Each structure stands twice: as structure tokens, then as C-alpha cells.
Image 1 (cartoon, protein in one colour):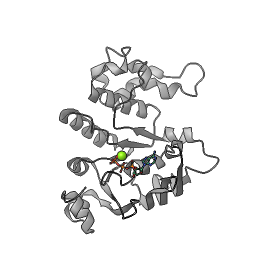
Image 2 (cartoon, helix red, strand yellow):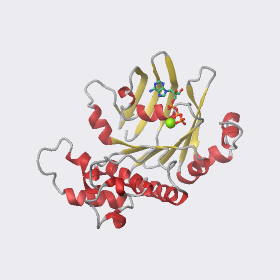
Image 3 (cartoon, protein in one colour):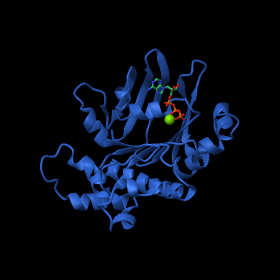
Amino acid sequence: MRGMSIENLSAGFGGFTAIRDITLTIVPNKVTAIIGPSGSGKSTLLRCLNRMHEEVRGAWMRGRVLLDGEDIDAPEVDPVQVRRRVGMVFQRPNPFPTMSIFDNVAAGLRLGHWGRVPDLEERVERSLRQAALWDEVKDKLHEPGTALSGGQQQRLCIARALAVEPEVLLMDEPASALDPIATLRIEDLMRELAQTYTIIVVTHNMQQAARVSDYTAFLMMGEDRAGVLVEYGPTEQIFTNPKDKRTEDYITGRFG
Ligand SMILES: Nc1ncnc2c1ncn2[C@@H]1O[C@H](COP(=O)(O)OP(=O)(O)OP(=O)(O)O)[C@@H](O)[C@H]1O
Ligand SMILES: [Mg+2]
């Protein structure tokens, strides 16, 4: 069973439930968008998919997340390995501040390697090409990553995530800090990358969800503020013919 599936997942912080009983099968090599109002648990859900949620103080979860049929939270599973297989890109580009462009991309490859990493140059170049950044940086690989523009920094972070050859790439509002042109580049890139990777992207931008994703999941919070999955399906159906009134209200901008 290739790919990722989420079974009856609930998660929260202390006495608070942020998401409740979410069941979702992610389609491999497609882009899945997660949409929903602020506070509906989108980021929490994403963090449960690569074991980053457990890094938060007081965090708890129930239910299962399966990657290629295996429970990523099983006691024998190493969270570092999970995060290699399920990479993450955040809202604000966060290149390692003291490192060059090259070293930023190489960082994940060097981790856990004693001595020389085989084919390091080639792998860095390949990742930068996949992130559509190579041509812009090939002559300045040893300049600091933070000297790039915001959009370039975000593509650098994507290259860094791709360097370790993940199966799934999680993106939490990856373009919301970028200008419209840089945003379109990231969207084009997501479409490209979906040929090789499974992509799960959180976005507040309905046009973006409609443009880039194949499937859309809509989360909303109930009275107790816990996020639940209201509707999930092919993006075209969600945007043109939603089954749930709440989905329709949200995508047409009536709330949220
Ligand atoms: N570290 C934390 N400690 C306690 N509560 C948290 C923590 N992080 C998030 N929450 C709570 O969990 C709920 C879901 O938050 P989450 O960040 O997942 O929402 P979101 O859908 O990503 O929102 P946004 O669209 O604003 O990014 C919110 O009520 C939030 O206050
Ligand atoms: Mg969020």
C-alpha cells in the first residue's frame, strides 16, 4: 500500500482538541490542498503527518497515520527517518542563516553521514534544478542562503527538503509571504513536483487551491473549536459542486 493515509486522527494540546477523528486517504503523486478557516487545525494536521506535532509541549494524538502501510508512530519507528520521508516547507522561508546556498541544500544529506557524502555536488544541483532555482544561483552557490529574495529563499527551502528524496512533501501556506509572481512560480513548481512526489499543501487562497490541487480537503471547527473534516474529494467537485452547505459557504467567501 503506497502512499499516506490518515485513520481516525485526533490531536490536541493539553485539554484542548484541535482536530477530531479525521480520516483521509491521500492519493500518491497528486497535490492535495487542505483548506479551512484559521484555527481549524490545518497546521496541526500537517504536523501529525511527519511527527512534528509531538515536538510541541503538551501535544497528544490518537488514531493512526500510515505511510506505505506502516504506522509512522509505531514505537520502533525513528522520527528522524519519518521526517526524511515526509519533508516540510513552512510559511516563512527559513534557510539556515549561517549557511551558504550549497550548504543549505546539502545539510540534510550530511546529517547522519560521517565523512564525504557520495555525489554531493550532483545531488545538490539536482535538488536546485527540481526546485527551479539552479539557473538563478549556480554562479553563487557559496553566498549565504539568506541573501536571496523571499521567493528564491522559499525555493531554496524546497530544494533543501527535496535533497533527501522524500516521498511526501508537506507545505504549510508556502506562498503566503510571497508576491504574486513568486507565488505563481511556487504553484508551477508544485504541479511539476507532483510528477515525482505526493504533495499536501495548506492554503488560505481559494484560487490557489483550485489552480494547483487535484484533491481538496475542507476542515472546519465545530462548537467546541475542534477541527473536523467536512468534505474531501476531487478539487473540481469541491469547487463546482460541493456536497456540504458549509463547504459551499466557505469557498464562496460567506465565512472564514
Ligand atoms: N502549540 C500550541 N499550543 C496550544 N494550542 C495550540 C498550539 N498550536 C495550535 N494550537 C491551537 O490549535 C488550534 C488549531 O491550530 P492550527 O494552527 O492547527 O490551525 P490552522 O488551521 O493552521 O490555523 P491558521 O489558518 O491560522 O494557520 C487553534 O485553536 C490553536 O490555537
Ligand atoms: Mg496554520
